[in-house]
Image (tube, rainbow, N blue to C red; front, top):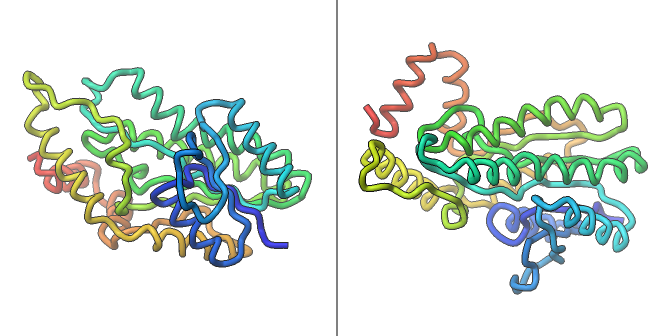
Length: 268
């Protein structure tokens, strides 16, 4: 029987690309969406799930197990973007971002773990972000949510290895998806002291996404990870300079690295 894969946020972007690719490789793929009835022509079934609602998570997982009898791979992909000067970003919006990008994936993992433990096997892949390896101006909260997920999974992985369960983090750089359209961004306020800097940085971020890489590249990497009997803990997928920026952060003095980021975003 083919491996059963569940992809949260499988209706668009990276999640859809992964689902389409795995379906073509004869995996049994299910995705999730908050509104699956509005999605047409999906190559794989979509279950109704809101990762911010525990009852919704439990219902979707139960439906999957009833249909397939098992879950081999969970891909935590659902997430939201958030931008803005931290001083001007509403606390409620920050909490929403953490609910979706951190607590949501954790609750999905907690729900599938009993099934994987009874199977004595399972693989949980978490889509994080290269932005989670550094504090980026006007993207600080997003960076924080993804960084928190990376560190949480490092700990959770060690806790669950004894049950035959693997956990892997995959950090993408900029990919051509619709994430910019769906994210929360603090408005550029006329009287804001951040107006000029934030406005130019926001424009640059949108351009990076518009000219990002093809999501099928992520799909192929995820497929390779699933097929690997002994996958690494961390993978980075993106343009060479984006991946190299993580290396630079490790080797450069803090203020030198900060100046590099300021120059990149035109903030100095």
